Image (tube, rainbow, N blue to C red; front, side, top):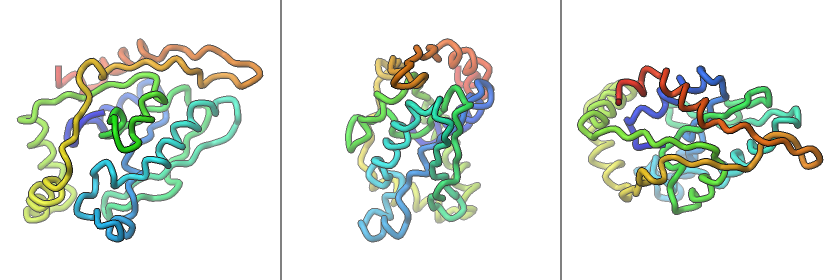
Length: 212
């Protein structure tokens, strides 16, 4: 969890590779641009109310108890070239013992996002000073859009119109959920605590070490 440019995607990808785990970015749950235009929110794309939070919570809920079902769970991906969600682009199968979820609003306590925290076992807040984060974000936007005018428009228009986000304090940056995802209704199994394994894997992430 963390603001844009904090390095969440890089750390999440490295963590998923090291655990190993499936990777579920929140970006795929953006509302389609046509729907955002209809709602009058296109210029605020990326704000909390421009995502399908109900669909996101539904996927997290199904992930809590699917390990013994033999089923796969499909989730949307996101095409950054056209800034559109891609239905069923991510497939999560039960053989993964963990799922790494990455996004800005996983610990947000408003707009329906408050339901997410109880579905997570462990949450980490990526805290990066703005003098590092903002230049990194500008570089990312230049890489994606290639034109200075579009980058300036993002900062001066779309981003400026978003309501300020109250990110969680450090007291909320580490959560543990005891609900089991293992077993089934007839044969429940205790879920192994992923905390220490996640911490050990994070210690191996190059991007995470750079911020210490």
